[in-house]
Image 1 (cartoon, rainbow, N blue to C red):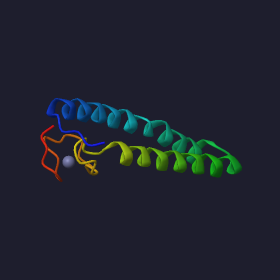
Image 2: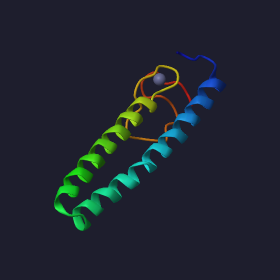
Image 3: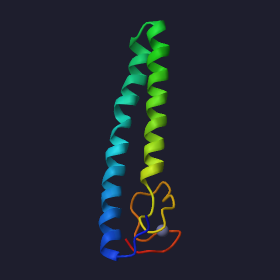
Image 4: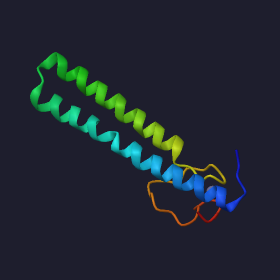
Length: 93
Ligand SMILES: [Zn+2]
């Protein structure tokens, strides 16, 4: 869905920015699991925990890639979280 109303675009951009922050927080337990697997788990569990954490991180990256898009043109906004305008269609947020 493409939006044209600037107020609507701003609201949606802020919602997605908030969502993006929430998504990056979800990576913290995955990193904790990886460290735990590396230093504290016995061998068969280690591999399982590692794979679990890798799939987890992959899913987070996918969510982030799906969420972090310009509300006006739906193009991916890249690694920066603080945009003033869209680098693709130049819509102001
Ligand atoms: Zn755009």
